[in-house]
Image (tube, rainbow, N blue to C red; front, side, top):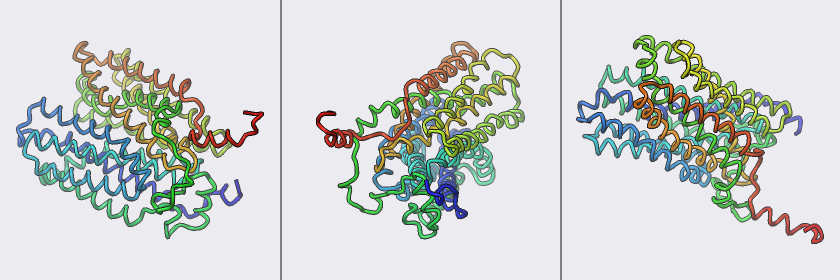
Length: 451
């Protein structure tokens, strides 16, 4: 690496880009969380039974998971600038349209369509990082935008509640929908790929390119694809690293969804926390997870900068985080609420510590000279969300059968162990996938006596 690229440039337009993407993720999570906050108010107006409300809450995740892979393909084909903007505009309109729903069926349609739109967010962010960041900064940059999920989840409750209190639940959905449309205007105004951005300095562009960023964006520029290596989707789905990481991350998501769904109920129903204590102590795991998200990315990139092989650097942080996430199982064996809270905080923080490196992997392993990073990210997120859909159902069934969260914690801990096994023993070396047609071309050039 040249001296020019070894030192980070003073101008840091790339960090503005990933922060802008993170704001999009924050809006994404506020929008998806708004219904859960507003449900006590709109259920009466729309005459929803508890069963109908539960169905509606789950509908979003089905289309969200199903459209991850198509959206990943679209991002790789048309670029993050266009797809992220269209996705956010789509989900913002669907959010605002919630205000005019009249009952179960219209609200169900709005939620299903919301999931379709929101599916474009994470693949778009994967693409942003792959194009704007050198290898030694990918994990921390991934931690920046994925932390938007933690922030959005935390701020949704006070923001949506405040708007409902002031203007009613219908206006709340309109306001947060408008916020998304304002972000779309900002995204289209400021976001470009590195090679086409008018504000980037030559120094920063050289640093990004020489650091191994995937700055080539042939589809967005209209260049010919004739000389680009191609890879079939079956090759991605059959690749050891892709499927190993996908299965491992799906098991991790089983644990993660406990914190998204059942955690508040656990604090109130089993630990006996009051509403005030829920607001105070319930935020601790989320704060720990946010700090760990950024710390994990920073450590992973630091290891790369110090010369560690990129596969070892990513896996080191992933394995450390996965080991810590297993602590959720030990919460089943303590009667002390604060010990339980500490163990759950460690588990959540462990998952997010690993998460930054996990989301750097799509750019690390995408075939060189191709536009498949977002597609790989879509595969990760699609399967992981289907696993996440199952998590609250399984844990809820165990709570109903046993009257306690203990069995649910042990089951979640078992999934954390399985994810660790896949990360360590199944994924193999995390390196760029070599398309079959490229491998065949290399073989045909070898001397016959070697073949």
